[in-house]
Image 1 (spheres, rainbow, N blue to C red):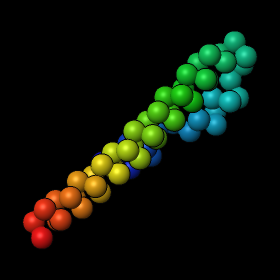
Image 2 (cartoon, rainbow, N blue to C red; image 1 turned 180 degrees about the horizontal axis):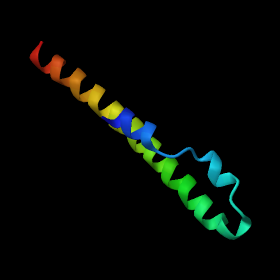
Image 3 (cartoon, rainbow, N blue to C red; image 1 turned 180 degrees about the vertical axis):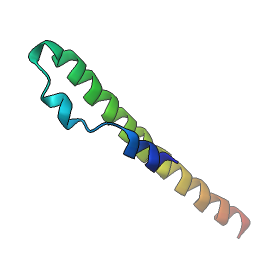
Image 4 (cartoon, rainbow, N blue to C red; image 1 turned 30 degrees about the horizontal axis):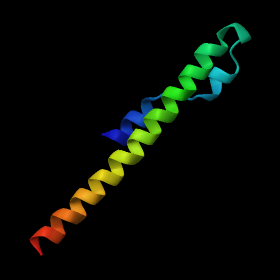
Length: 59
């Protein structure tokens, strides 16, 4: 489900084309995109670690 959510996220490129008056919105959108990407990577790592620990626990 997480990969699908990433595909739904808007491309950060259009935010770069916004006028300078919307620079704060552009920066904040970019930060949200980066934070979400880091969260997704952490989630994938946690799931893989949990599965590895699960199999190691039963073996």
